[in-house]
Amino acid sequence: MSLSRLIARIFMVPIGLFLAIMAASIFLGFALNSMYGGPGMHHDPAVENIFAIFSGFVIAFPLGHFAFYPAILGLILAEFFSWRSIWIYLGYGLALSFFITHAPGEPVDALAIALDARAMAAGLVGGFVYWLISGRGAGIVKRSLDNRPQNF
Image: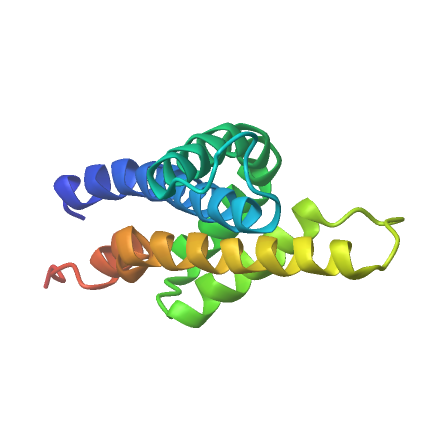
């Protein structure tokens, strides 16, 4: 086992998770801004974009708080079983974002469906960003243990 590969995985998994949460939150900030719009923007695109990015950073803290432990559980499984498929990370991001943002007793109306659809799209963005940064090399520690030279 290469120590440099182990250190790289130890750093890349948390970095990938952090950037995935940030990307999903910023995407959700833009999606919610398109639904509601900010206060007093007067249709200035630069101000609207700054407000959407700022609201994405604000959204990142509660979403990251609720998503952290389930995401870590899924990422440990992905590392252990060497899952590298983009579809696994997209599906997990989709399911995770739905269960985090959907309240069990919430009424089913057009607003709730629109919010859930935007949250699930943000989960897809987060899953893609994680796969792009860390998911493509999942299980590299296990693979290096299997490919070590045999002593004869």
